[in-house]
Image 1 (tube, rainbow, N blue to C red):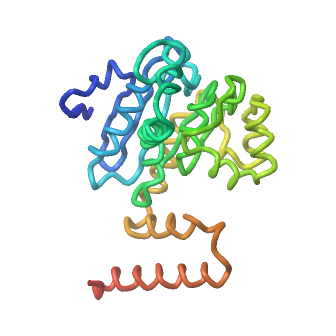
Image 2 (image 1 turned 180 degrees about the vertical axis):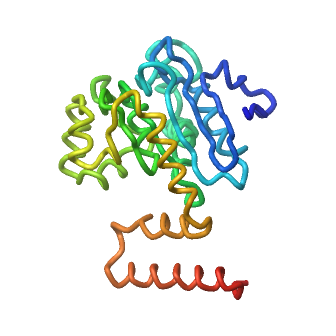
Image 3 (image 1 turned 90 degrees about the horizontal axis):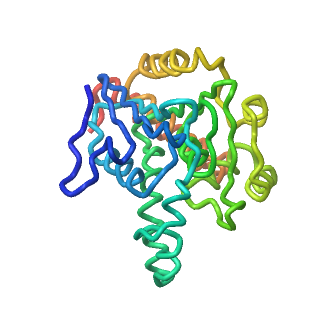
Length: 265
């Protein structure tokens, strides 16, 4: 089924360039502006944030994909360079706090994908540039077609990555490599992405949809309550000592045992 219960006053999802489909416990979010390689706009980000609010509680897996030959070419430069409320020119004339608050709203379109109660998978084909790369980075897993190309291209516009991608990038490839990727804006082919830890898997273009569906099915085959707990074990793992991680593991296992045997509160 397709979910389109947008909030009053919102841009209709199809006009914003996002489609939201439900199939039981699997939700699929599709960027659907293929004529501009799924370039992103503030309206698209608003709809992504809206999806996070209307996501049913029984959804366990969210798949994020792009329609056509690219995942997302990043920020729509016609909007960034225009004269709308979210153009760079308008943002520059806000107070520093107002500008930061506006960017926080943009970030909310991406950061909900880290929700501990769901597993999120980016199905990436073709280019994933700038905001497209960061959208994929906010997902838990990234399955790439062999024609995929990542690039953190904000630096080419004199900007910085600001949509929740820098911490995840550093966690995946290390701070030094992450810095190099961000300051050069270079293209990273699928083979390198897999080698340095950006890709969960790389598959032929023709196999991308089936591979992502198989991964979703494998996740759903696990008992419902175990998966969020396992995801929680890895959230913030870089900031924990071994002793702290041991504690987090035993606390999670205690919850699982009590839940499985019906003794939990």
